[in-house]
Length: 207
Image 1 (cartoon, rainbow, N blue to C red):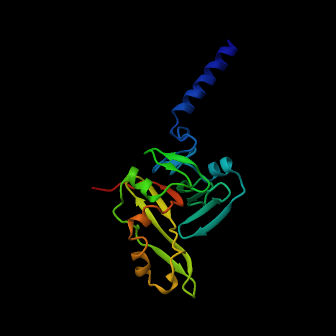
Image 2: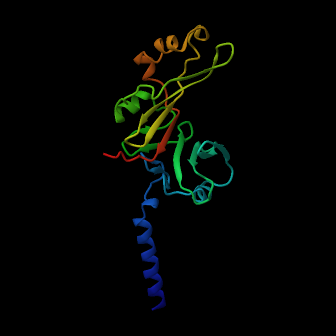
Image 3: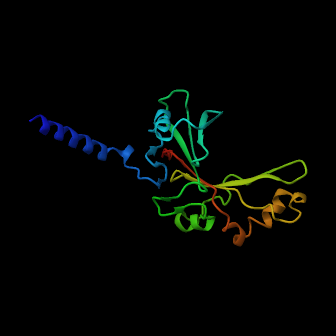
């Protein structure tokens, strides 16, 4: 009788686990607006992240959010971490470290390019998101060039750092001139690699 009770309790435990949306996220499956690898936006806490990924991380603060970065794993988490039980707001996946597939069918890895994103998600309203950021040193050479392809209705964004360093005399060009001979040309633009995927909660639009 005692053994029967144990079996029933164990079966009920398994059933509750299988029904839990938190545990339904599969390894290496990226869910737009939801999460990745058993980590779920708006539900996972800082304590959950630390239990799963460990305590070897870097933490960055700034603005309303703090970020926990596992650089060796290629994963970052942003949230309001003032409390151990505050919920996760954003996940960043570096594609030079992560291999996965989105729920829409995009194979996400170091070989993923803009053209691959467009085949699955279509071209976003803004070709460069809000803008192309072009950071330069005093001599005009590049510090960083980056922009985002954002799909707010799905809760996913793609971070791109285009390779412009090879362009001759780029340090003498204005940002607009540089974009015109590089990112405004489809054969160049569409073949730029995706550096990272950012997952975030989809905000409901009030009608």
